[in-house]
Length: 302
Image 1 (spheres, one colour):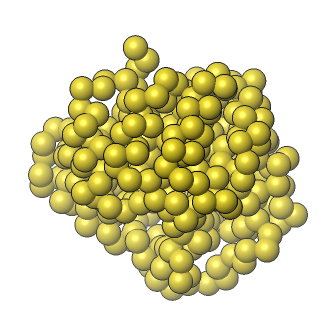
Image 2 (tube, rainbow, N blue to C red):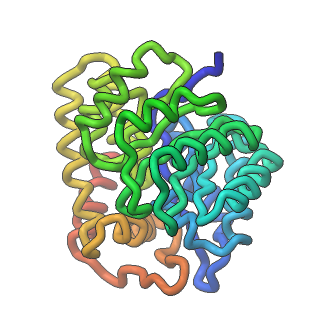
Image 3 (tube, rainbow, N blue to C red):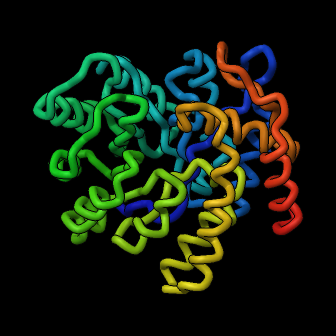
């Protein structure tokens, strides 16, 4: 039985230079910050990392440099989401050869698939590539929302190591957690920041939370508070996590604002520049984020 990952695994932002290439120095600095603050792993090329929108060369560089920077201190999970099965398998093969520890896949987002086809898709991915596979439910981006019943069926397939739920439905996550409570080899992660505490109490084993890029202290703190049944500490971290949501609120689709807001905030802390992959525009100035970063950096001595 494989050992499951437990704790906070940030969906790492992809630091870019103005010319669109990977900023390797900024990436190393950011990784050290996250690892120093006791994250349980690094997930690259997810939605927060602009994964499918990045050029292939940048995605490949991100995988190689993350594995190199991690140096086996924490596991590295790689997003391989694409539009067709063969590209998933090619990216999974590259991740495996680069030394990654697992791959994360949302369903193909262009052609709608029926449940039997989604089941077959994950069966093929779980069996035809060598790394543990994490299922990613992200309907805001894929336009496919997997029912808890389908997720449970998929998680019982060979080769499946875990699940990241970014659908935002706490009740559905609880159904999955209840059905999988005896599976000590399956990691169940909550995506939306503010639902982390409830998911942990329901039986989840961690979070893949965008805000952990900026403030891993909040999310690791929440994980440890819930693990230790420390209600007062959990409430304190929940307040910080709710406050951090102001960083995202700059586009009609919040998913599209997450990377922009986080990169702007991280630029204020001198971790990286604020550039996004073309043609997305970075945030030029935002007083609400400036205020949050100032309070956060003072409180946690960043």
